[in-house]
Amino acid sequence: MSRPSVSRLPLLAAVVLAALLALVPMAVKDSFTIQVLLLAIMFGALGASWNLVGGFLGRISFGHSVFVGIGGYTTLLLLHHLKITPLIGIPVGGLIAGAMAYLVGGPTLRLSGHYFAMATIALLQIGLILVTNWQWAGGAVGMEAPIASAPWMLLFRTKVPYYWIAVALALLTFVATHFLVHSKSGFYWRAINGDEAAARSLGVPAERYKMRAFVLSAVMTGVWGGFFAMYVGFIDPDSMFNLTFSVQIVLVAILGGVGTLSGPWLGAALLIPLSEGTRVLWGSSGKGLDLLVFGLAILLVTMFLPGGLVTLRRRRGAAGR
Image (cartoon, rainbow, N blue to C red; front, side):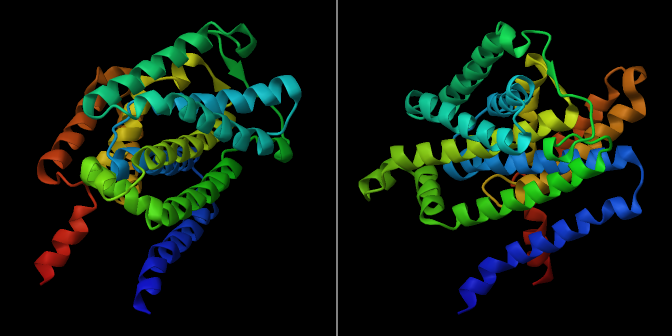
């Protein structure tokens, strides 16, 4: 009887934390602080979505921002050309991102290691070239959302409503990943990650479950891409189909701890405030000092906490005994 209660504890903690985060705008009026928190929440969710493939399945993707781009462009295209609310466009963007993952997953998921990583980078570059030359989507110039106050269109004049939406979406993302990881799919993903040949010999349908991880990860990433497009109000190929964006998604998961539920969120809680804070503190006058501090933090964590920030809890527990 104790097992179900243990499995519910992370969900309860997530609900409590989400409620506390939702109260932050009541006490904090600084728009920059709200923006940093929103970005940390978003990158934590993107890292958690990537973690299904990169952490639990063990396939390192450096092209996940292609799904961010698909979700963002789908949402704004439907809004701009067909006047369809993002309340519909965002989930549609997630589904299209999942469909794209299904199409490309067949050949790419047969690869492993650096071959799979290179294939995902190639996919990202193909997406960048196609969208840059797609005039209906604005080409290299990009697209922008209308400036208005229309809640049913997810158009707000302040950051706070977007922040609350991000908190709600983050809670849904955590709940979804929690149930997926503790399901039969999650068990099979870990088995494939540990030894794919052994898993196959035990009857695990590896191709089916690798595809499931890739598609579900793409769907969740695409949904966040649609939200991000509405939040920033402007997208272009370089900002959405961006390798640095993809690397940042990977880094939050690695710093926090890949293959764990809380790792990506912890990584984003460290990485995003550090990145945004140093960028604003030094700006162009820093001549790259912000990137130096950013890289130093990554180096220190990887040197002294190779398992990610999540291992701090285990070390404290070991020290207590």
